[in-house]
Image (cartoon, rainbow, N blue to C red):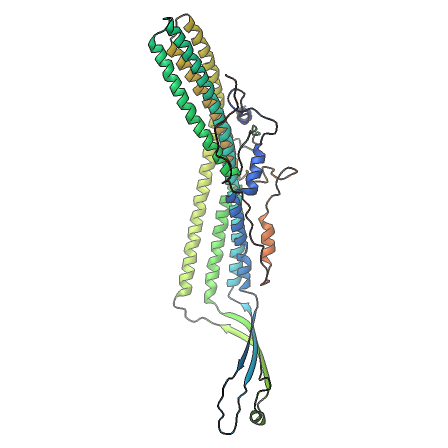
Length: 495
């Protein structure tokens, strides 16, 4: 029964737009899914993380290149401007053309190249996990911004209605003062509450403007009418269930684990620096004197052109390197230890976040029911106080207090609904279940999901020295030309 109750409360939390307290749904209004799709396509933090991941992809071919053959050549031409003959003979040519080439093909490097490749591949996977974490973080920002706009619009509407009520109260109290039915104190109290209500309205309007600006920052465009967000699916029934899912699916924790594994490969790479290296090497050279070799040189056996070629094995055996390998190994071991400890730190953070988000989500859902009771009771109390005031059993101050209590209860109710939805989404995010594939952002009206593996598959096997990507084109949208936001909210009926 308790679990079903939580589900009903969550659906209630999704029904954030109440007729008396916030914006109503409007045909053509923006949905939460549309806001998420917009951010998925043009959020600068997400676009930057994708570009950084593409740079990480290139570490694999960079590491692999250390184990592939290399070929280089050189060409030269020299012309002797002045030369001195020895005796009657001149043995030196005036022009010389030379060309040479050399190659090296590593066949053994102590396992260093393989370990470096493994480390690079692992860091690519780490980066892909971190990219999912960035994606989830952006989605959490969008959800919070979306719900903050609707919440603050609701609070502005409530405070605006409250000011209207207080203005009516002040006029009625002033009229009654004119006929001696109430005192100057009653008028002053009504005037004071009206001033307080107007100040609260200005503060609420400022909060709404700030919320709309944060929405622009996260989504990339001005918020219009925002529809009620749909109910969240897949929320856990107990904190232990949430923790278990998070330990398996949280992208930040997955990235930390992969970082530890990559650091282990770094130790193996450093170990290899103490071992011999063997390579097949070869070279070829050609020289041509372009017909300028003197006859005397030809007579003694010099050739007008010549060429040589050789191939062999080259072994490099380190005997002593000044302690460099040992220092590099110890450094890599320390980094591995640091990565391992960081993994535990991230795991602790994930567990604490999941449990805290679960508690916040449950508390906010419970608060919805309690605040709804408070709103109903405050409305009934205000009605009774107004009736009793007509027969002299209640004062003007009693009415003002009852109106303020109703306003506070209504604000607390819409705030609890916002908090329940945001806490529920944050819980899913901490569990690793708020990624683009989980939110169904693809489809007929959705976005083409970004797959970092596509670029990696292209880059990892590329051994061409002349390949390059097109010049980067900015993916995110600038918001400098968006208008400054205001606090306009369509009129709402009084509660």
